[in-house]
Length: 168
Image 1 (cartoon, one colour):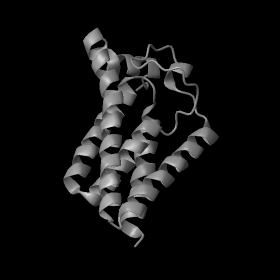
Image 2 (cartoon, one colour):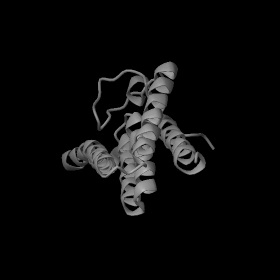
Image 3 (spheres, helix red, strand yellow):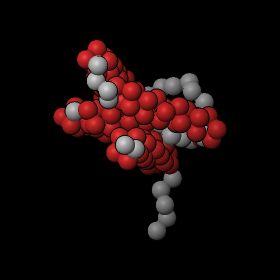
């Protein structure tokens, strides 16, 4: 069986989202969910800080280290984005060149979901649901390959497990 090329695969995956309304929804969800997750995280950090909760530093440092790690890895690898290598019309239009692996949007959402889960399981579940939607929008939007999504999730979950579950 012959494997499907990326252009054909992307055309099939993105076809249901090609109408103006659906494309707008993908773009809005992509941006809005990252902002909502980040805002929730900032509020959670503020509450921890102002109440003197000792968990503040870990909740701040683990995501910060993860963000820095992902930023360094993607700059070092500098993998191209799908729209750079293939004849596709991405739903999410970006001018960014390279730095595709891993997705920093998704990695940030996932590590924040880990932090929120550690602080409040209900907020964590909601943030993980938002992260799944962000993963979907980055893929359907044509700005990341599946490998970029998987790498972002793996790095953030590994950092979250180490930072929130393994390190005392």
